[in-house]
Image (cartoon, rainbow, N blue to C red; front, side):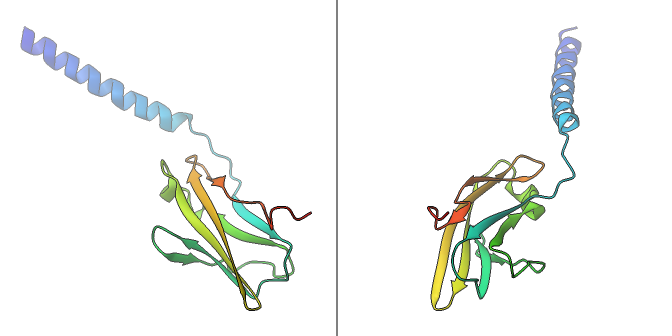
Length: 128
């Protein structure tokens, strides 16, 4: 009888853990919005830019960027799954003439979208 009771408790425990995981998944409702974080630069237009993923040293480039804009993309929802349950460092790198801008950022994920933890919205930060 004790063996059956212990087996029943083990099954109940496993079942409860599976149900908790299932409930977490079921309660997650994401919007269809595609998030891209940008930085507004009050410098001359950049001649080149990319984002450096510090952990992997990969460069992230954006092909469909409007060059007449002062807002430069840093990171988008392509990295949502990779950033779940961790914070990662990124550096926005831009070239203005002979000067190189290096702006640090930290991103994470809320399981639906990327979320900026730190880093400026505007550069230089005190610009209007």
